[in-house]
Each structure stands twice: as C-alpha cells, then as structure tokens.
Image (cartoon, rainbow, N blue to C red; front, side, top):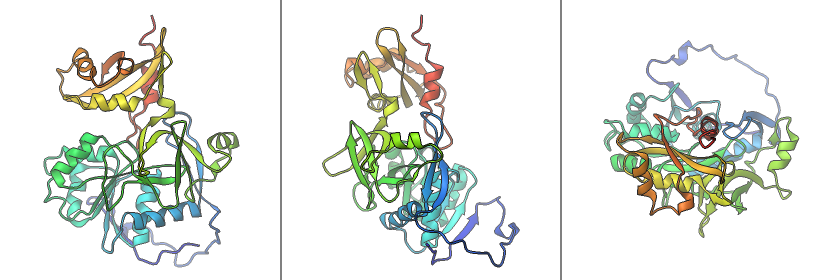
Length: 373
C-alpha cells in the first residue's frame, strides 16, 4: 500500500472552476486492500501503427516509476507544476500527476494548452511537462524571454520526438535546455536525459534506474519493475511482444552509444525497404529538417511497382518558395542516393494524434496510389 505523506494542492488556471465549486468528498470511505501486483489501470495505446491495445498496469508498475522519477528529476520542496497535458494518457495521468502528488506540490491546472496562459503561469511555477508542440509554440511566442522563465527550474518534453531546431530555439530564448525523455503506455518512463549532466538533442538519455535496456535487431527491448502485465484480453499480442527472458519488444528502432545513452531513430513498422535496401525515415527527416525553409517533415514508404516501396517526404514549409528540386538538391550530398525521397509533397500541417505524434499510417493511406499507373 503506497501512501502520500505530503498535502498537494490543485489550482485551476484563470477562467476555470474554483475548487470551492466542486462537490465535497464524503467524510469517510472504505479502504480497499490492494497488493503491489494488483491491476491499477488499463490504459489504451495511442494506436499510431495499428488498433489500440489495453495495457494492464499494476500498482507496483506505477509506484516504481513515480518514485524513480521523483529522484531522477530532482523534485524539490516548493516546486509548482504547470499541467496542460491530457489526462487520458500516461504522460498527463501518471508522470505529471504522480510527480506532483509524491512531492506535495501545487499544480496549476489547464484544460488545454494555450501559450499565453502557460507563459503567464511561469511567474509562479517551476516545472512544465509538455509535448514538442508546446515548445514549438512557446519558442515562437514573442513574450518568451529569459525574464519570463526566471522562476522556472525544469522543462520536460516527451510523447513525440523533439526536433533539434526546437531544442536550439528554446535554449536561445530562455537559456534552458529542455530535458527530453522517452516512455510508452506499456512501461511509463523508460529513459531520460539527466537532470545533472549533458542533455543531448536528438537523444532520449539513459535507461532509468532499475530499467534494463538492450538493442536486438536494431529494436529497443526493455525489462524492469515498470513493465506492464500484458494486454487486456489479448494473450496473443502479449506473447508476441515479450521475449522468454522477460524483455519487452518496444517496436522502436534505436541506437545506444558506449555510455548507454539511447536515441530513438523510428518505429520498426515505419522502416522503408526500397529495392531490398533499408531506409530509416528519421535519418532522411533530419537531413530535410536541416534545410532552410523546412518547418518539419515526415518520411513514409508507399507502394512502388519497381522497388516494392519508395520513400516519400511530406513537408511543412516555412518558406513558400521552397520547391521539390531545391529540396532534393539540398540533401543530395547528405544522403546516399537510395535514401533520397522519390517524391516530395507539401502540406499545410502533418496529421497528429492528441499527444502530438505524427500519424504516418494516415499519410501512407493518403498517398498509397502515388506511384500507381
């Protein structure tokens, strides 16, 4: 049984309901005995590559992750959290909430992300947890300055890849280096850049204390007390995702350097095989994103009559004059010929789910007939 020893407070952002308006809880309630291995929650995966699955999480899964993160991110007395994340997802429901609860911290509650409101709250807060979209919008805000964030101690990003350009732009305006971490519904947080030490853009950091990580066939596999009990009423998919030695196959393509620091390079299901050669979308996206006039990119594989699959880039431009020939010329020296996109398409925005992850399945479906005669 895990108990909170502190007394956290919840504060609503301006314009939201006051706590006094909420129904008072009953004076007494019956405590239901629970053991660490009992099921605490079923959270459904975001379903970016297939049908969503219910991940069964135990009390020990949640508690172990929360306790590790409290120490790893150096929660301090007096910390105040700005919470603008959805609470149907592990990031907002567990990572943010549990940190504040364990620390006895005040939480400034926003029912959605509004850059003006979040910036206004930074004067009385110390921590912001967000998805990359938060930081893109904040970095573009004219009022984001070192003075505006003078009270802030920590900016954390996750749930989707943080572009190096966003990392750099945010640091230039605030002096803060965003702490990027990596996790998933099935295990909560898995890796994190360090609180003390170098935070490297494009890398998600080291496996958290108690978490084991390895790379097998280029895919990250993990094991630890944070790992879920399996998929709800889906023993077949549970078995397919687990190794016999207890390691979980994340489905994320990753690298690990000699120090143990991890970089996520894409989803295994997003790997493009063109003419028998492997193309990793993230490598191509990094090259494209480095070109002046590119806001962001998504590289997908679509059917091709000769190659089997062909790489196609969907680009959001910041320079409307940028065209396909100019982009291809710009990456010609950065990418081997077989890795260069066969086509470049332009869009006003990339399709995303509620947590900011690009929906590549939707892009593949939309452009599946691109090379069909």
